Amino acid sequence: MPALPDGDPAPPDGALPDGLDWDRPLRAYLHVPFCTVRCGYCDFNTYTANEIGGFDVAGYVQAVVREMDLAVTVGQPRPLASVFIGGGTPSLLDPGDLALLLMALGERFGLEDGAEVTMEANPENVTPAALHAWLDAGITRLSLGMQSADEVALRVLQRVHTPGAAVAAATEARTAGFEHVSLDLIYGVPGQSADSWRETVMTALSAQPDHLSAYALGVEDGTALARQIRRGEVLPPDPDLAAEQYDIAD
Image 1 (cartoon, rainbow, N blue to C red):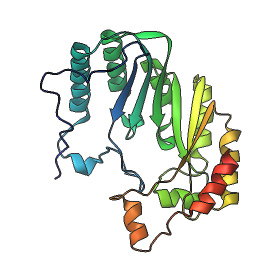
Image 2 (spheres, rainbow, N blue to C red):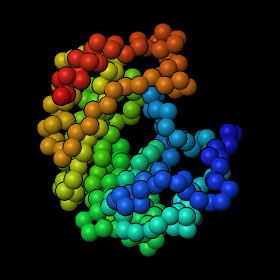
Image 3 (tube, rainbow, N blue to C red):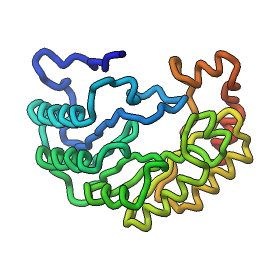
Image 4 (cartoon, one colour):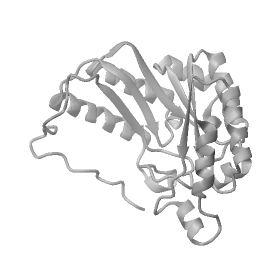
């Protein structure tokens, strides 16, 4: 069983690097590295259940709280302008653990009035009960990983949700009370034509998101997608087609 990485060593004196601008708004990023299935293109710091052995989520949450305590001792704590909870798949986290993390941040730093608290979520994890629990925990903005409305593209990316799931999730989020919903898309996916990409963009816009992000697919060494391309099972991304799709989104 592979061990979890230790990460970068802390400075011997526990101090943060010189030159940090403490006058800038302070923002926090919380990483939730757990995934049910790792997407084929993903090279982020993520772990599926069979990779973490006996390590449990509760232990991870407590470790994050201890890191907050460290940050307070070496930094200059003050109210946070925003919080972003990414992953991995933060929507797999129990709402009680999510609330605990946000409460711990609030106790140690505080939140500015109107601070935006964003959480990434996979469409397949979105239910009315989950949405209300996330709102109760303090989430104010939901970022949904739509990626594509094309079934072929979703299969290449090894996403498990159906083409219409993200729009349905965005609609449910609005109904539950989320005022801010964003969608993430990926262009340059092998097998996705310009017309298919245009349809994906129009489908995403039909959900009336507050924000729409489009990212170019990157093929990173060590990912399942890179291995598939190397074996000839999937064509590499076409840079000219990706450029055309960029223009469509723009």
